[in-house]
Image 1 (cartoon, rainbow, N blue to C red):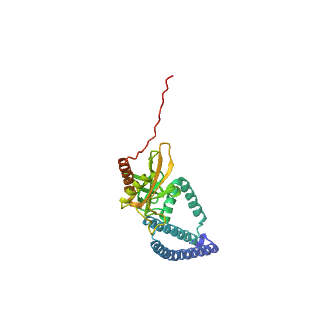
Image 2 (cartoon, rainbow, N blue to C red):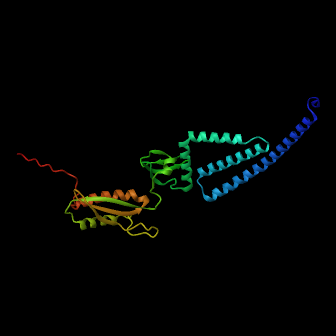
Image 3 (cartoon, rainbow, N blue to C red):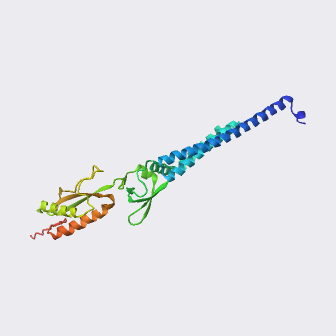
Length: 282
């Protein structure tokens, strides 16, 4: 019946087109099967590489998902092109959508990129005590977009990873040792040698204070005491004592409390700023 409406040439062209289309479908199915197997193999290889590099669990799952999406998207584009469908319009559409989404979520993407950088280069890890963005606390959790800190007074601070990865940060847990620097002011005329001897005795009594350099650090030194400033109301004596990072606050409070109590009992004066006003009657 079709021969009544179609010429032999048109009928032959339709047959060739159908044959070619079926051929393309067959090729597309073969490419899909091979592509699916390759995607599975690449994901397996990626997992092994990430496991060997000991990447953080959060980043591990995310990278696997990204690899999976990129590979499947590439395979779909290849299959569409095999079927004879123009792919440039699809790619342009996805590119435009990506640009629009990127502009709308610029801040979120910055936090995401910061999270990836933190999880890859690990400037800090869960359990470290850090100071950043005006806050200090123990790292409780590192997420893709945010880092969660727990302060010493049990407050939960959520810091976006964008600013955290590009700003200045102190990691107090990076080194196993810390130095406690303290200044004490004494009245002019105070016997400096007697002050140093009294503070040395206080330092030597505390087992948490390191009394000599340690083999695994070039920074740690024996306790040091010296005159650093001639102030307006007295002389300023600086003390530098090394201890383990976990003992920092214990040594800090020990030095302040003990120096104040014992040196006051020994008659040393801690001056304070004052103003003398002289009234002259004419």
